[in-house]
Structures are given as structure tokens and as C-alpha cells.
Amino acid sequence: MTKATAKSPWVVHVNCNSCNGCDIEFLACLTPMYDAERFGVVHIGSPKHADIMVVTGSVNHRNARVLRNLYEQMPGPKVVVAMGICPATGGIFADCYNVLGGVDKVIPVDVYVPGCPPRPEAMLDGILEGAAILAQKQQNTPTVKPVMKLKIVKPAPAPAPAEAPAAAGATGEQAVAK
Amino acid sequence: MSTIVPFGPQHPVLPEPIQLRLALDDERIVSVLPVVGYVHRGLEKLAEQKDFVQDSYLVERVCGICSFMHSMSYCMGIEEMMEITVPERANYLRVVWAELHRIHSHLLALGLLADAFGFENLFMQLWRTRERIMDAMEYTTGGRVMLNACCIGGVRRDINDEQKAFVLNQLKEAEAELKRLIPVMTDDYSVKKRLVGIGILDKAAAYAAGAVGPTARGSGHAMDHRTTGYIAYKNLDFEPVVETSCDSYARTLVRCREVYQSIDLVRQALDKMPDTEIKVAYKGKPCGEVAIRCEQPRGEVLYYLKGNGTDHLDRMRVRTPTFANIPALMTMLNGSQLADVGMIVLSVDPCISCTER
Image 1 (tube, rainbow over the protein chains, first blue to last red):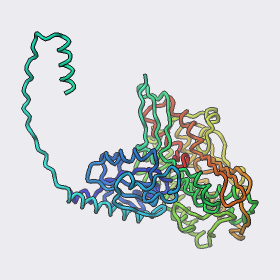
Image 2: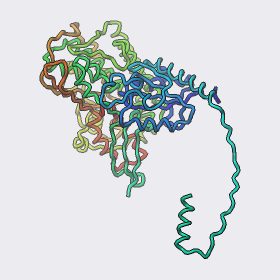
Image 3: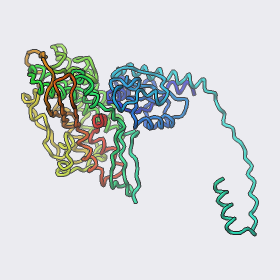
Image 4: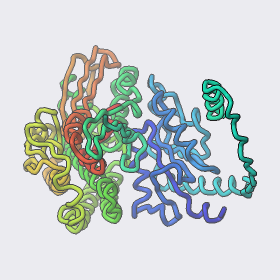
């Protein structure tokens, strides 16, 4: 399992506050000239299937919550690769009023790939570095065997028939609340 | 009672975050509310803090896809304000890089559209061809995406004979590849099924919504700002590409035909380029105000600049083409099917980072 994931990491791309420069270079990495798929890298749309998250652009007031949300949806162990200088520090936009800074203010980052935009070769290096970290994380994560617990459910005792209707209503609500 | 379906901000079809709140009646869309702000950085304010020479590099980061055209529009504005006459060769070089940008942007948009309707092979092939254009830009300026080639008073780099031969060769190869690929985009049965008759924007509606660029030209308006002949376009021979079927297919056809047109324009510009200086020195600081327009891959961009005689501008305002196209997009989406939303959005080729800056 560890070997398989490291040799074929699934990548989700999150555009945070990017100017598109890094985005199109990341997409260019996937296409025949640079072809990330030869390393088993598969680009997918849903964070729920992903091992590696590639973030481009810095964080602003509005998308911080979206980024956090997407990160939490990924199954662990997971790796975050920050593509470009904006997700690292804010880059040229660091002084803008709406920029909070690098994405490490919101989620933990494992690999930084600097550049404006980075060269596709550097991006590929970054993803492979991320895959190596992913394998390491997976080794360190103790395997949890699923334990099936049997629960014996006893039938609830039948309610006393003589109770007043108002009191019966109250107990019924309580049972729902429990 | 309609159901609200959020489309975005993270969606496999969208390369950029924008949310469209779609109110649905069954599968039919009754109203659309675009929710923006996910990519807003505050670039216009930053442009006032940096000095006017640094701004020409800053505006390249408005958008990474049409980066050269943004810095070109900005430099044209400052030059008009300071009454600088740009050498003729620099004007031709600007046309070369601007048109290379248009080719790569259109191929990118067509590729993403192909990916969105599930034709991954076509996406990969179009992007393979796009790499030839990226190589040509890298060989002439040193950068693939951010060229930084334009500066106030001209351009920073010249194209020598060897580079010219390289660019022409890349264009020749790219054109040969596109002759095989574009027919797939325009004639394929399954592609037509997804595009023809989808996202109708008739001629009057396009005018009323203020559509620009390929969106307006796909609806029968011969609106191309290049025909006014800024930089060296006045000396080049071309006609605006117009389609009249007003649907997603028409907008796709406009882009397909414009790729060939741009290849031709680069050849003409490289051929007619006079042998002069590429840059002039200038003195003083920008003072006054100016509004300048340029034709970008997605349509017409408007720059408003106001200088006060110091290093820092008083105001810089950018009205980008996608901003103008969002009302048109809403007109198209109203009454269409939920399954077609991806096609319609990508047929406008939205650039959200431009729109929000």
C-alpha cells in the first residue's frame, strides 16, 4: 500500500488567490511535454480522493475557510505542496490589503516550490518530493485494524399504559433526544 | 420553490474559484447569482504604493494568461500620458508577443473546454501544440509565462535572425499540427452534441449585456479593437473573425479561427519589422489622466491611469474583459440545463483572477 501510493500519488489542485500563472504551468506539467503521469501522478477533481494537495496563490479573507475545508476533506496521511512564491509568502502581493500571507497560516505545508511561476521541471520535483514525504508519513502511521464490536441490543421495556398522555409525550421527546 | 445548487468555488470544470448559485426548477436554471471575491488581492491599491516603473511588472500579475498584454496596455497608457513616441520596431515586437499570447491563450481555452466535455485526448494534444508557442516565447524573452519584455518607452529585448527563424519554424510546426486537431474540435459528432445550440446569446442580447471579445464576435458583432490600429496593427492585414450562430459552438469556432489569424499576424509582423531602435529614453514623471483600450484574448481591456507628477500614480483602474462578459454569461445560463453549465461557462473562457485582481 505504501509503495503503491508513493508511486502513484493522486493530486488535487486548489487555486487560492493565484494569478493563473502557476495554474497553467501546473496544468502544463500534466500534458504530454512534461507528462507528470509517467510518475503515476493523477490529477483529480475531488479532494476526497487525493493524497497530495497542490496549492497556488496566497490566502485572503474569503478563501481561507474554503482552503481549510478542502484540506479537512482529504483522507490522511496527506501532503501539501505550495506551488510558487505566493503560497509561500504572498510574493509580489504580500503588501496587498486583502492578502493574509502564505497558505501555511491556514494549513500545514510540506513542500515549498518557489518561483513566479516555477518552471514545470521544478514543479515536478516538488510533487515527487511530496510523494516521498507521503510514503514516509504512511510508514509512520500505525496501521489500525478495524475492530468489529458486537452490540447486544435489548428490547426496551414496554411503557406503562396507565400514564397520562402529556407525560407520555414528554418521555417520547426525551427518547428522540437521546 | 426552486432549489439552489452551488457551482464552485472548487469544481473539476473550473480552473479558478468562482461560485455560481444556480436556482433550479427541476434541471432548468431559473436564475444565477455569481459570488466573487475568492481571488481578490487588492492589486489596484498596491499599484498606487509601488512606483510607476515597478507597476509595469505588477500589472503582468493581474493575469498569468494574458500577462504581456496587461503590461503592454499599461505601458501604452503611461507613454500616452508622458508623450513618448515608441520606436517602430518595438511596436512590431509588441505585436509578435501579444499575438503569441493570443495563440497560447486560445489553445489553452480550447483544451480546457475539451477536458470539460470529457475529450481528454484532444485536451492533451492541444496542449502539446501549445508548448511550441511557449517555447517560442521562452526562446525570445526568457520567460514562459511572465515575459517582462514590455517596458515604458519600448521593449526590453530584440528578436535576432536566429530567434526569428526559430519562431517561424515553431509556428509552421504548430500550424501543421493544428490543421489536424482543429477539425476534430469543429466537426466531431460528440463535440457538436455538447456545443451546438447550447448557451444561446443572440445579437441584441450580446449588445445589451455589453459582451466583448470572442463572446461578442460569436454573436455576430464585428467588434475587435485591433481594427482601430494601435501599436503596429494599422500596418498589418487582417479582418475580425465573426460567427453568427450565437451559441457555445460559435464562440469555439471564433477561437479556432483566431488561432490561424494570429499565426498569420505574427508572420506578417516578423516580416515587416523595420530595423530601428527598440527602446527610447524618457524623462519626467507621469502627470494627467488617460484611458487606454487593448484587445486581449478574452476581449477588450480598459486601463484608466491618473498620475500626479510624482513616482506614484494617484489611481490605476482595470476593467477586464471577463468582468464585461459576466452579465452575458448570466443571460446565457438563464433557462439552460444544469448539465450544460460547464460548457457554457468555459465557452466564455472566464478569467477570474483578471476580474477580481
